[in-house]
Each structure stands twice: as structure tokens, then as C-alpha cells.
Length: 126
Figure 1 (cartoon, rainbow, N blue to C red):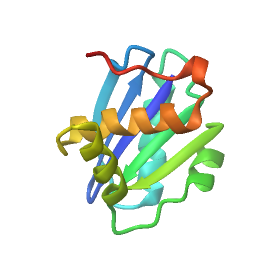
Figure 2 (tube, one colour):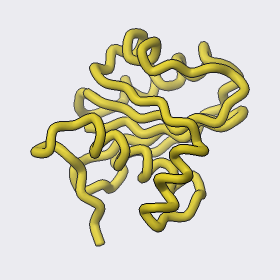
Figure 3 (spheres, rainbow, N blue to C red):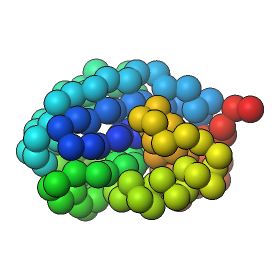
Figure 4 (cartoon, rainbow, N blue to C red):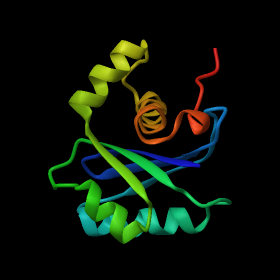
């Protein structure tokens, strides 16, 4: 299972994805800093029906977010943090709009493509 996140000033939208790239669960939380981001993400993960092994955070915040710190405090094996400018560029190449839902799908695709072995990668349904 993959955790995808769209982190913007004041808001964190978190989603859990499974192999068909349909989100199992999506929630939005207010966040003002990294401490709140970690707190709401922990709460969100506690409700996950499966263990999350990889995550991608698409980030546009006034505070710094580091993959190694999130991996450690959230106990997720592999975490990627992508600046939304980079995520937006990748999403544009994928032909997706830049709304929050597309950012979540894009983050899940990025996590899948770059962080998982080929046999476990997500496939975007046509």
C-alpha cells in the first residue's frame, strides 16, 4: 500500500492507494508546521487497513519537509518528498490536471514508479 500526500500551506490531503490506483481512503487535515504534518499523518496511518511501506509527499509549504525524517518518525520504509514544481512537471507529462486529486494520483505514481520493485508497481487504469 502507498501513502500519497498533497501538502500545501495550511492543508495536508492524504490518501491510501492500492494496486488499481483507486484511493481506499482520502482525508484532508489542517497543518501549520512539520509537527502537525507528522501528527495528522500518524493518525491517518493508524486507520490504514494495511501496512504502508512507501510514501510520496508532494510539497508546497513554508516549512521544510525531509524524506529521511518522515520515514523515521512515521516508520515507513521508503519516503519520497517531491517539490510541487517537480511534481507538477511530472503530472503535466502524465497529462493530468494540477488539482489536488491529480497531485495525489501523481504522487502515488511517482512513489510506485520510483520506489517500488516492478512486480509491486501501481498501474493507472485507462
